[in-house]
Image 1 (cartoon, one colour):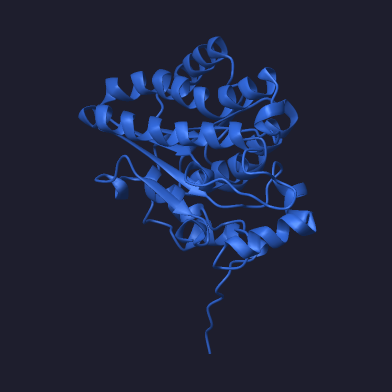
Image 2 (cartoon, rainbow, N blue to C red):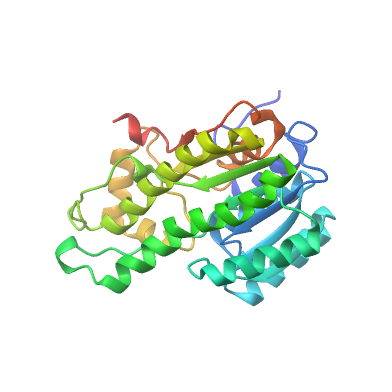
Length: 281
């Protein structure tokens, strides 16, 4: 008797990404640029896009991790992948790297603005350098990457831009150890990502560009791993999530592929929550 697991396991998610959606979210011939691709969700996103036939430009700051991912993608999915060192808070670097990618691949069809960072500090104690680091990396880079790549997409009259928002684009959180304002920089930046998504979607529909965002709850990644291991924080996540757990690897795959593919041709300006029901409370 055939059974269906309610929750995908780590061992099966990559296979699921390349088989269950095969021929439905076909990205053959498309070129995708993923920021923050060296680890966490960005690494996963790059592999998922490649599994559907996309060539992938991998952008991040850590060369060794990027090159390892490049080699894994080319050997596993037999699509083209190339690594580019990029600090998304550096606008000059954005302009240079995007030009290099267009020169290497010929175009960019899909942009995934995934790079991010965080800083937990009460508003009364927040340092300017920490504030600017989070705002520049999480919000300003989304605009500048979209602006630069958007020119390429507008010229070809086609594009898919997918921004990584967050459950914190709607709510903050307050626990025994985290005051409501302790995530102020991150919350502010993710609200900004939501605004950028809506404004660009309205303006760029005329160019055949869709602009959407994914707003995840808490998923285990390099940035969140330590927090999710802390017992008090873990209990808070369970209490604030109707599904009573953090997200697992693979549970963002279909949202990404839908927004990256032609199946979402009439979807723009949307923020798709994948948060286990957190924002229903």
